[in-house]
Image 1 (cartoon, rainbow, N blue to C red):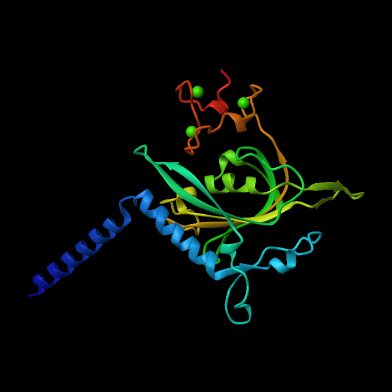
Image 2 (cartoon, protein in one colour):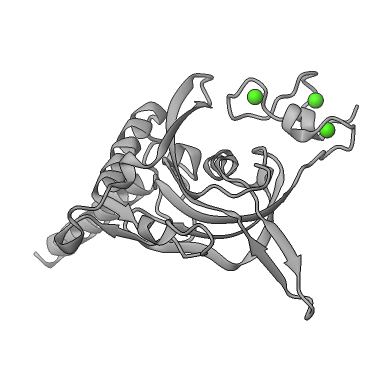
Length: 254
Ligand SMILES: [Ca+2]
Ligand SMILES: [Ca+2]
Ligand SMILES: [Ca+2]
């Protein structure tokens, strides 16, 4: 009897650990289905939330963007959904299919300078959030990014904003003015998709609030052709490699 019992427990443990293994190797989700599911989550968020747009009526101020739910005292607020712009991007899957993904951007203040291309260097303060409000990344002090090193949603969303102007003060600090402020909202297929990263679970739509201070156009391979003109001219999200040598055009000076 004792033997049977321990055998049963052992079987149960094996079963349990097998099941756990199966969970860990969940097959990759279908890109198209995930794009549709994420778009629904994004629309739900945008239709049930608003931002502090009244604080932006005086465009000389630099308020922070704050999201809140439309309910109670705020039930008459205008939803984000009616204030964002939708942009559809095609994502090339490993099977070669092109799947539409919707990115939404909010321009709280446009800025007065130039817009970056999606592959320039940008100097911004930012905050990254999940749809439940969890902050997974951020920098209140501005940092430089080479947009080519970032997830596609970020680099293709930030051109909706324009840079500002800056003055160097007597104490060598810099004051930025009239810079673009906004937010971008995009599905996991334009983010990390199945890869859980830090506190970001797999298949997470992402939100970034951005203050775009200044930009720097790039020519990564120094061939005189701006990276913006040779990065992804067919718009499939994959850097173009015209001569097929494995080096993307924007890095291929030969
Ligand atoms: Ca170039
Ligand atoms: Ca391409
Ligand atoms: Ca090449």
